[in-house]
Image 1 (tube, rainbow, N blue to C red):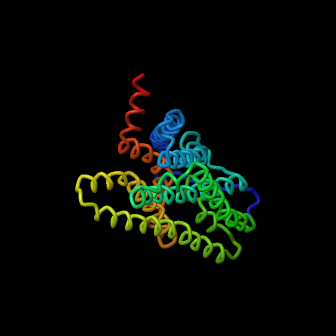
Image 2 (cartoon, rainbow, N blue to C red):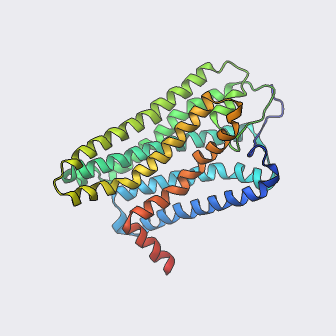
Image 3 (cartoon, rainbow, N blue to C red):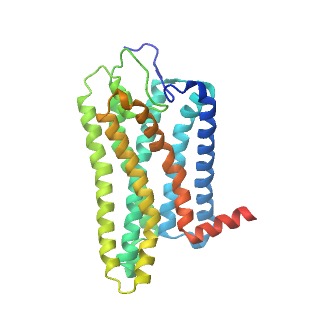
Length: 304
C-alpha cells in the first residue's frame, strides 16, 4: 500500500511546456467567476426589491458556485503556477467531499428554481403564499443536508480502502471516479453506489425539472395572447440555459469516465475542467443578461 500518504495530481497531459500560459487562463476564469458571483450576491443583498424567491434561489446558486471555486482553486492553480502536484490523502478526500456535496446542492437548487418558475406560471395566485421566506429557508437547508447526506457515505467508503502502487490521479482535482480506480480493495459496491447516486440525484432532479417544464409549456400554450405567451417563456430561458450547461457537463463526464478508454484521456481532463469551472463562470453572465433589473443594477454599480 502507499506509504507516502500522498496522491499526485496531473495537469493537461502533453502541455507541460505551456503551463504558465494555461495558468493565466485559469486565473482569469477564477477572477471573473468569483467577482461575478460576488456581485450577484452583493446586489441581491443590498437591493430590497430583489428579495424575491427567484433572486433568493439565484443567491443560493451563487454561494454554491463560490464554494466550488474555493474548493478547486488551490490544486488547479497550484499545479499550473507552482508545479505543486502533491496532495495528502485527507486533503484529497476533503476536496472530493466538498466537490461532490456542492454539485449535489447545485442540482437541488436548480430544481428549486424550476419549481419557482412552475408556481409563478402555472399557479400565480398562490405564488406568494407557497414560496414564503421561512419555507424558502427550509428548502435551502434541505438542499444542504441532502448534499451532505448523499456524499458522506461515499467519502467514508473511499477512506476505508487501501491504495496500492501508482498514486497518480489524471485530473487537477480529486474526483471520486479517479480515486476509486487506485483502490486495491474490492470497490464494486462503491462503484455501484456512485452510479446509483448519479441516477438518484442527477437523474431524479433532471426528470423533475423536465416535468416542470412540460407543465409550464402546457400552461403557456393555453395562453391566448401571443405576447404574454412569449413573455412567460422568456422568464425561463436563463434557467434552461444553466440547467443544460450543468447536466450536459455532468452526464458527459460520467459517461467518459465509465465507458471511455485511454484514447479519450485528454477529453476526460478537458470535460473535467468544463464540469468544474464553466457553470460558475457562466451562471452570473446568463442571469445578468436575461434579468433586466439585475443587469441595470450591475451597470449602475460599476458606473458609480
